[in-house]
Length: 205
Image 1 (cartoon, rainbow, N blue to C red):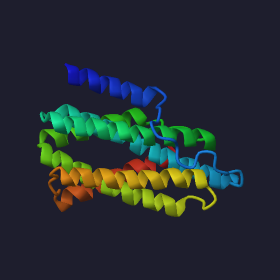
Image 2 (image 1 turned 180 degrees about the vertical axis):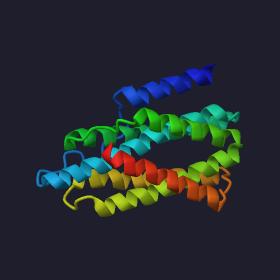
Image 3 (image 1 turned 90 degrees about the vertical axis):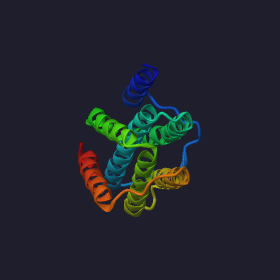
Image 4 (image 1 turned 135 degrees about the vertical axis):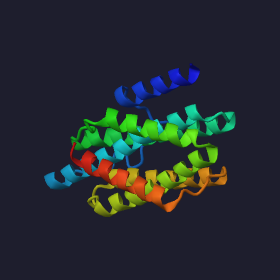
């Protein structure tokens, strides 16, 4: 019951509350006044995609925390979710500055990610940690692609994405050190395909 209440509270906070970061936002106050309308639109769409990724991260870590019977691992997952809240707050604030809106499908993204997190958790702690490693590696690559696409003068967005990329790499390393099991190639390919569907859709909706 406690796990269920925690999961419900996390879902409501992620989807409907204004997130608050524990760390200062990277690049806050940077000059982005030279962005052309098309550049601002692109940056807003990319930050919306990143915001969706953070919605999913909250769902994944919350579900994995609920699924494990290992108290230490549960604490690990909840700590990671707390750290990812910074990313959620940063991307939401930057979207608002760019005049962009969150994805209209955020409840769907959250539900899907939560289900995947529960499935990974039910398959065992090492599999669950392996899912974290692969997810974070794919997110890291995705963020690198955004650094290549964001306007060079959009220092505010680029600073956020760069810090997120560094944090995701650290989360992957922590999960690997905790005993993650390497996922088979077909599972990794399926995860990449699902991520492409999400990112492509979230770019527009």
